[in-house]
Length: 201
Image (cartoon, rainbow, N blue to C red; front, side, top):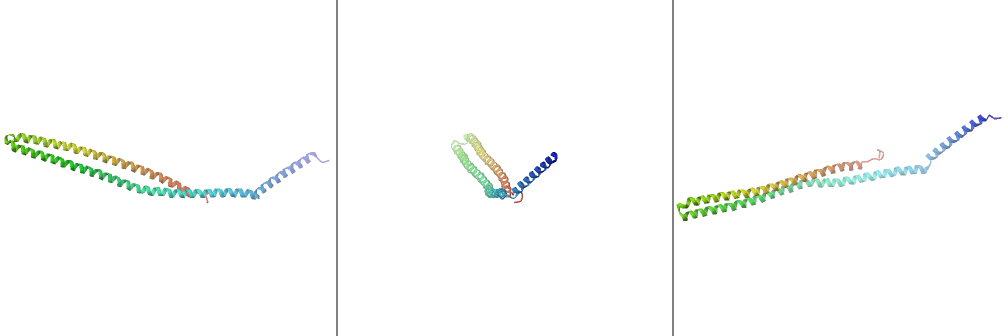
Protein backbone atom coordinates (compact mmCIF):
# COMPACT_ATOMS: atom_id res chain seq x y z
CA UNK A 1 0.00 0.00 0.00
CA UNK A 2 1.57 3.41 -1.01
CA UNK A 3 2.74 5.76 1.71
CA UNK A 4 0.24 8.61 2.13
CA UNK A 5 2.95 11.16 3.02
CA UNK A 6 5.03 10.27 -0.03
CA UNK A 7 2.04 10.67 -2.32
CA UNK A 8 1.25 14.08 -0.86
CA UNK A 9 4.82 15.26 -1.37
CA UNK A 10 4.83 14.12 -4.96
CA UNK A 11 1.56 15.98 -5.52
CA UNK A 12 2.97 19.20 -4.13
CA UNK A 13 6.09 18.98 -6.32
CA UNK A 14 3.96 18.37 -9.38
CA UNK A 15 1.83 21.36 -8.51
CA UNK A 16 4.90 23.63 -8.13
CA UNK A 17 6.34 22.37 -11.41
CA UNK A 18 3.06 23.11 -13.11
CA UNK A 19 2.98 26.64 -11.71
CA UNK A 20 6.55 27.31 -12.86
CA UNK A 21 5.76 26.08 -16.33
CA UNK A 22 2.66 28.23 -16.45
CA UNK A 23 4.60 31.31 -15.35
CA UNK A 24 7.31 30.65 -17.86
CA UNK A 25 4.73 30.24 -20.53
CA UNK A 26 3.11 33.55 -19.61
CA UNK A 27 6.47 35.42 -19.71
CA UNK A 28 7.39 33.83 -23.00
CA UNK A 29 3.98 34.75 -24.38
CA UNK A 30 4.47 38.33 -23.26
CA UNK A 31 7.88 38.54 -24.92
CA UNK A 32 6.68 37.01 -28.13
CA UNK A 33 3.36 38.91 -28.26
CA UNK A 34 3.49 41.15 -31.37
CA UNK A 35 0.71 43.34 -30.01
CA UNK A 36 2.72 44.10 -26.85
CA UNK A 37 5.75 45.14 -28.92
CA UNK A 38 3.51 47.27 -31.15
CA UNK A 39 2.10 49.13 -28.15
CA UNK A 40 5.60 49.72 -26.77
CA UNK A 41 6.86 50.92 -30.14
CA UNK A 42 3.91 53.25 -30.62
CA UNK A 43 4.58 54.79 -27.20
CA UNK A 44 8.23 55.34 -27.98
CA UNK A 45 7.39 56.80 -31.38
CA UNK A 46 4.87 59.16 -29.80
CA UNK A 47 7.46 60.37 -27.29
CA UNK A 48 10.06 60.86 -30.02
CA UNK A 49 7.60 62.80 -32.15
CA UNK A 50 6.63 64.89 -29.12
CA UNK A 51 10.29 65.70 -28.53
CA UNK A 52 10.65 66.71 -32.18
CA UNK A 53 7.61 68.96 -31.99
CA UNK A 54 9.00 70.61 -28.86
CA UNK A 55 12.32 71.22 -30.62
CA UNK A 56 10.48 72.83 -33.52
CA UNK A 57 8.55 75.03 -31.10
CA UNK A 58 11.85 76.04 -29.50
CA UNK A 59 13.26 77.02 -32.89
CA UNK A 60 10.20 79.17 -33.61
CA UNK A 61 10.54 80.85 -30.25
CA UNK A 62 14.22 81.55 -30.94
CA UNK A 63 13.34 83.20 -34.24
CA UNK A 64 10.63 85.36 -32.68
CA UNK A 65 12.81 86.38 -29.73
CA UNK A 66 15.68 87.24 -32.08
CA UNK A 67 13.39 89.58 -34.01
CA UNK A 68 12.44 91.29 -30.75
CA UNK A 69 16.09 91.59 -29.74
CA UNK A 70 16.98 93.14 -33.11
CA UNK A 71 14.17 95.68 -32.78
CA UNK A 72 15.22 96.44 -29.21
CA UNK A 73 18.84 96.98 -30.17
CA UNK A 74 17.66 99.65 -32.63
CA UNK A 75 15.30 101.25 -30.12
CA UNK A 76 18.08 102.33 -27.74
CA UNK A 77 19.99 104.58 -30.18
CA UNK A 78 16.68 105.94 -31.51
CA UNK A 79 15.60 106.86 -27.99
CA UNK A 80 18.91 108.59 -27.33
CA UNK A 81 18.61 110.46 -30.60
CA UNK A 82 15.13 111.65 -29.62
CA UNK A 83 16.44 112.76 -26.22
CA UNK A 84 19.17 114.73 -27.99
CA UNK A 85 16.62 116.37 -30.29
CA UNK A 86 14.42 117.32 -27.34
CA UNK A 87 17.40 118.81 -25.53
CA UNK A 88 18.43 120.77 -28.61
CA UNK A 89 14.90 122.07 -29.12
CA UNK A 90 14.57 123.19 -25.50
CA UNK A 91 17.93 124.95 -25.71
CA UNK A 92 17.01 126.65 -28.98
CA UNK A 93 13.71 127.87 -27.54
CA UNK A 94 15.52 129.28 -24.53
CA UNK A 95 18.07 130.99 -26.75
CA UNK A 96 15.34 132.56 -28.88
CA UNK A 97 13.38 133.78 -25.87
CA UNK A 98 16.49 135.13 -24.19
CA UNK A 99 17.44 136.96 -27.37
CA UNK A 100 14.00 138.51 -27.61
CA UNK A 101 14.15 139.55 -23.95
CA UNK A 102 17.57 141.15 -24.38
CA UNK A 103 16.42 143.00 -27.46
CA UNK A 104 13.31 144.31 -25.73
CA UNK A 105 15.26 145.33 -22.64
CA UNK A 106 17.93 147.02 -24.73
CA UNK A 107 15.35 148.99 -26.66
CA UNK A 108 13.59 149.97 -23.46
CA UNK A 109 16.81 151.16 -21.78
CA UNK A 110 17.93 152.97 -24.91
CA UNK A 111 14.56 154.72 -25.13
CA UNK A 112 14.77 155.68 -21.47
CA UNK A 113 18.25 157.16 -21.95
CA UNK A 114 17.16 159.16 -24.98
CA UNK A 115 14.16 160.51 -23.10
CA UNK A 116 16.46 161.59 -20.26
CA UNK A 117 18.81 163.38 -22.63
CA UNK A 118 15.92 165.11 -24.33
CA UNK A 119 14.45 166.18 -20.99
CA UNK A 120 17.82 167.51 -19.81
CA UNK A 121 18.19 169.53 -22.96
CA UNK A 122 14.77 171.11 -22.46
CA UNK A 123 15.03 171.89 -18.76
CA UNK A 124 18.61 173.06 -18.68
CA UNK A 125 21.57 172.30 -16.47
CA UNK A 126 19.82 173.05 -13.19
CA UNK A 127 17.45 170.09 -13.51
CA UNK A 128 19.75 167.78 -15.42
CA UNK A 129 21.10 166.08 -12.26
CA UNK A 130 17.61 165.19 -11.11
CA UNK A 131 16.74 163.85 -14.55
CA UNK A 132 19.94 161.81 -14.68
CA UNK A 133 19.09 160.30 -11.31
CA UNK A 134 15.64 159.32 -12.54
CA UNK A 135 17.12 157.83 -15.70
CA UNK A 136 19.67 155.86 -13.68
CA UNK A 137 16.93 154.47 -11.48
CA UNK A 138 14.93 153.51 -14.55
CA UNK A 139 17.95 151.74 -16.03
CA UNK A 140 18.59 149.84 -12.80
CA UNK A 141 14.93 148.85 -12.57
CA UNK A 142 14.95 147.69 -16.21
CA UNK A 143 18.14 145.67 -15.65
CA UNK A 144 16.66 144.09 -12.54
CA UNK A 145 13.48 143.21 -14.39
CA UNK A 146 15.58 141.70 -17.16
CA UNK A 147 17.40 139.57 -14.60
CA UNK A 148 14.13 138.28 -13.15
CA UNK A 149 12.73 137.42 -16.55
CA UNK A 150 15.96 135.78 -17.66
CA UNK A 151 16.04 133.69 -14.49
CA UNK A 152 12.49 132.60 -15.22
CA UNK A 153 13.54 131.43 -18.68
CA UNK A 154 16.50 129.56 -17.20
CA UNK A 155 14.24 127.88 -14.66
CA UNK A 156 11.91 126.73 -17.43
CA UNK A 157 14.87 125.42 -19.43
CA UNK A 158 16.28 123.64 -16.40
CA UNK A 159 12.95 121.93 -15.72
CA UNK A 160 12.65 120.84 -19.34
CA UNK A 161 16.18 119.43 -19.36
CA UNK A 162 15.50 117.60 -16.10
CA UNK A 163 12.30 116.12 -17.53
CA UNK A 164 14.18 114.97 -20.62
CA UNK A 165 16.92 113.43 -18.50
CA UNK A 166 14.38 111.58 -16.33
CA UNK A 167 12.54 110.33 -19.41
CA UNK A 168 15.79 109.13 -20.95
CA UNK A 169 16.81 107.34 -17.75
CA UNK A 170 13.43 105.65 -17.43
CA UNK A 171 13.53 104.51 -21.07
CA UNK A 172 17.07 103.16 -20.71
CA UNK A 173 16.00 101.23 -17.61
CA UNK A 174 12.95 99.84 -19.36
CA UNK A 175 14.94 98.78 -22.42
CA UNK A 176 17.65 97.18 -20.26
CA UNK A 177 14.98 95.23 -18.36
CA UNK A 178 13.43 94.11 -21.63
CA UNK A 179 16.83 93.00 -22.92
CA UNK A 180 17.38 90.91 -19.78
CA UNK A 181 13.96 89.31 -20.16
CA UNK A 182 14.58 88.44 -23.81
CA UNK A 183 18.02 87.06 -22.98
CA UNK A 184 16.48 84.71 -20.42
CA UNK A 185 13.71 83.66 -22.82
CA UNK A 186 16.28 83.02 -25.57
CA UNK A 187 18.23 80.71 -23.25
CA UNK A 188 15.01 78.83 -22.47
CA UNK A 189 14.14 78.55 -26.16
CA UNK A 190 17.64 77.31 -27.02
CA UNK A 191 17.39 74.62 -24.36
CA UNK A 192 13.98 73.61 -25.70
CA UNK A 193 15.25 73.45 -29.27
CA UNK A 194 18.06 71.06 -28.20
CA UNK A 195 15.91 68.79 -26.04
CA UNK A 196 16.73 65.08 -26.45
CA UNK A 197 14.62 61.94 -25.98
CA UNK A 198 16.15 59.72 -23.30
CA UNK A 199 19.26 61.88 -23.59
CA UNK A 200 20.28 60.37 -26.94
CA UNK A 201 17.86 61.43 -29.68
